[in-house]
Image 1: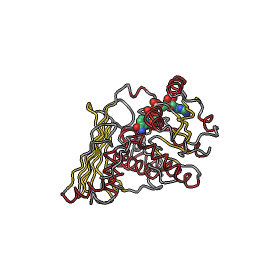
Image 2: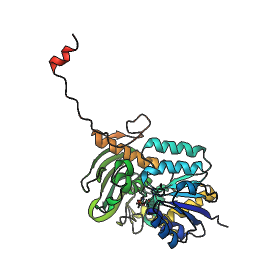
Image 3: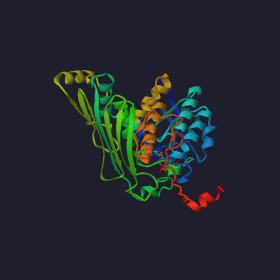
Length: 375
Ligand SMILES: NC(=O)c1ccc[n+]([C@@H]2O[C@H](COP(=O)([O-])OP(=O)(O)OC[C@H]3O[C@@H](n4cnc5c(N)ncnc54)[C@H](O)[C@@H]3O)[C@@H](O)[C@H]2O)c1
C-alpha cells in the first residue's frame, strides 16, 4: 500500500499551484491537511476550492500539528531559511521554494542541519520535470552524449509594474535578487543538471526594465569543469516570452521547446551526430515512460524518495550549486573580474551576494592639513 504523506502548504501564491499541479494529481500519495497564509481571503478561497480541513494564519500553529509529515514553504524568499529550520526542528520534512536561501552561508547551515536531522529538506526545481529534458538527461547520464562542447541558455520573460505591486518583490531585503534569483534560476539549474559543475564565471547585471532595486537583465560567460563553454542571457523585458536551452555535445545536440514556463516539456530537438549515435539513442529511449511535467513530476519523485528512502529529486547540493552561480555572477559584475568556483567561507560574498553599498568618499585632506598633525 502507498503511504499517504500529510502536507501543510505555507503561502498560497505559488503554493496554490503546488496543490493544483502537484498534490491534487496524486491523491493516493498526498493529503493536504492544512494550509497557512497571513491573508485570510487567500486562505478561505484556496481552502474552499480544495476542501482543506485546517486553515491557519500562524506558521507556529501548523508546526504544532503532530499529524503533518511535510511542510511545504511557499512564502516570500527572506522567510525560507528560518521557516525551513523551524520545520526541521519541529520534526517535519520540509519542501522549500526557490531561492532556498540568500547566501551560501545559509545554505551551508541547512546542509549541516540536514546531516543530523531525522527529516529531509527538498528545494524546489520543478522545471526539471518534463519528457524532453528527462530524455536528454538519460542520454547524458548514460554517457551517450559524449564530450560537452557548448550551451546557450536564454530566459526571456516579461514583468511589468503590476508584478512589482507585491511589496516584497524588487527589493534586495525581501526578494534577495532579481532575474537571476527569482526567474532564470530554473534554466540555470537545468544547465548544470545536464552540463555538470561550473569552474569560472564572468558576468554583468543591470536594472533596465522596471524601476526596482534588483537586477532585471543579466548575461554571463561560463567555463565548465569539463572545459565546455556556456553563455547565459536573462531578461524580464522580452515582449515575446521564451526559455530556450541549447546543448551541443560531441554525439548529439539538444534544443528545448520554447515554452517559457515549461522548457522541460516535449518537443525537444534531439539531433544525433551520426547514424551510430542515433541508433544508440533510439535504443535507450525504446522503453520511454511518460514523465509528468513540473510539480506533478517533481512531487511524484519526492514521494518515492521519502517513502523508499532513496535520493531526493532535488538536493541541497543542487540548491547550493544554483546559489553559487548567483554569488559568483554578482561578484564578477561588481568587480569586473572572472570568479573561480567553488566559493567557500572566505569569499567576500559568502555571507551575502547583495551589492556593496557605495560609501561616499571622504575628501582627501589638503597637504597643509596633513602635515600640520605631524608637528
Ligand atoms: N517555482 C516556481 O516556479 C515559482 C513561481 C512563483 C514563485 N515562486 C517562489 O515562491 C515564493 C512565493 O512567491 P509567490 O509569487 O507565490 O508570492 P506571493 O506574494 O504571491 O505569495 C506568498 C504568500 O505567502 C504569504 N505569507 C507571507 N508571510 C507569511 C507567513 N509568515 N506565514 C504564512 N504565509 C505567509 C503571503 O500572504 C502570500 O499570500 C517566492 O520565493 C518565489 O520566488 C516560485
